[in-house]
Image 1 (cartoon, rainbow, N blue to C red):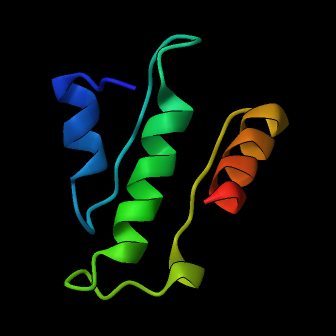
Image 2 (image 1 turned 90 degrees about the horizontal axis):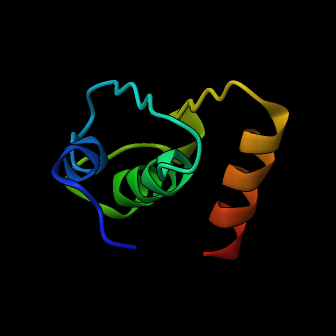
Length: 72
């Protein structure tokens, strides 16, 4: 997937909280997935994965996010 500048900014924001809000089919789940992966894999962030909180508006979106993270 090719990310927009705004999506790249959200993915790379670091430890700071991020709000990812956009229309249906715009890549929110992909952005959140990449953000979580980056936070976990970037050892300079030193983030405990059990301390990451991601909130979605629907159960379907949460299930999709979990499935994508489990697949990695």
